[in-house]
Length: 260
Image 1 (cartoon, rainbow, N blue to C red):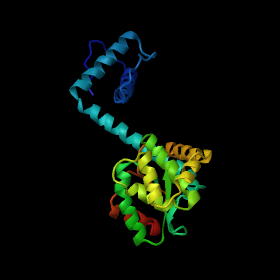
Image 2 (cartoon, helix red, strand yellow; image 1 turned 120 degrees about the vertical axis):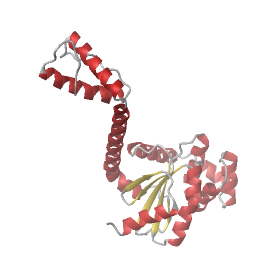
Image 3 (spheres, rainbow, N blue to C red; image 1 turned 180 degrees about the horizontal axis):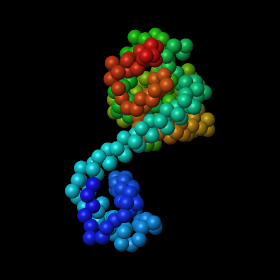
Image 4 (spheres, rainbow, N blue to C red; image 1 turned 120 degrees about the horizontal axis):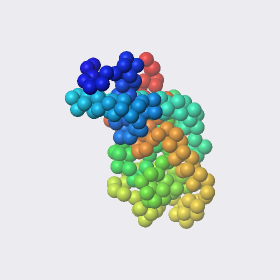
């Protein structure tokens, strides 16, 4: 690299320039300001800034390259964190104390879903899940109530969890996720009545503090796994964010049964 200058720069200074350049590129990609390095004199610092600025202006593509590299490193680090946390949390996810399980309770493959009853993508995935459960009699589906789309979503999850006391969690879950459009309290109660729930008992059971604790625990688990949206799935020991096609879903299950 050629460094035009009216003042000669020593070899150690050149190496420091290269190091400073790498740091500045990394910092620029994060939009953060850098203070002058205390190891440089004022004149050296100004000279380095000029050289770096000139190089960047002559080669602006390196900014995009640096940003791409940074994003790639951040995604890799995130994936590594998620996988490490998932290994610790997997036993609790596979066997939640609230027992929100549909499909074959003794199935040889377990899929975990984080969902919100008002999530459009969750609704679109639900048909795929039902078809898969119907075709695959050895599939166990664990449902993690994760209401993130406002108060009506919280009400829906509380109602669903309360419906366990009347042994109607599965039908009620299906009714709410099959409902087209947003759910509010009136709609939730109409759907509850439609699957045979006693509304008075349901509303009383929804006040159980244990239900709030279940939802808060699910949110804490999602935070540890850096899950910020719904749906999100755990298939085997793999975290799968977002909706997937039926073919992709079947392939993920197949890989769990026949690894490698």
